[in-house]
Length: 308
Image (cartoon, rainbow, N blue to C red; front, side, top):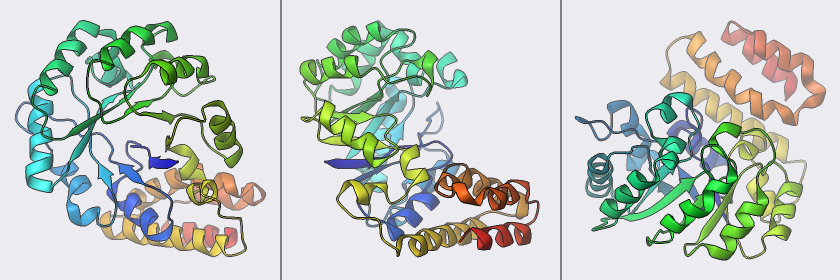
């Protein structure tokens, strides 16, 4: 099983990915949060840190592109290859954000099948890099997906990553495994499953349901338990895990303090981190509450010491 770290917007940044890679193993590919090219700029200055080779050293990293403009995609893919050495890019057809969808991008592009078809025709005419797609099943109903898959099947996708929900479901409800099962039968591209793999038990159920699928993308499951990939690979839980988790926290905290200005900005990132990571410490609710209430780094650090 190949394991991929999902492109979580605002969370799985180059700071987080580097710290994770230095502390844990088991991830075959990391995906960047989406790059959003515009008419005058392919990769915005704030996004360049995400794709700089020195910020992704030792990791196989795939930049994700969010656009519905052929020329923007092609220019960005060209720059990523020529300036930064990337051989693969990923097209985002899954983002359910209202702002993104209203512009016909992300999952919103799925509602424009003819336009999407022309877009794919153009970007696959002379691809400079391998192209993979991360998609949802549609906008409103899972029944939209067979016609989308018939479009995807016309192109030599490097991979097709499927989150088996529609846009209107967001991240709620149960993924439509029945539709994914049909994709397993009908897709001409290598498939990757993505969605609600948060525990080792979730992984085992998915593996039993889809034994032929050899690629898995995980997002929030790794945010909550950074050891999940190693556990999927066969590593047992051991007493040394807590010191490793603390080491990861400390490395990430130090990196944010170096990168960001002021207690407020650092606390925002670390509180966001604990929303997921804190689920491993249900018996430490009092200390977790102190983290949520902290307004100064000194108070935050005191609460973290109590947890570890």
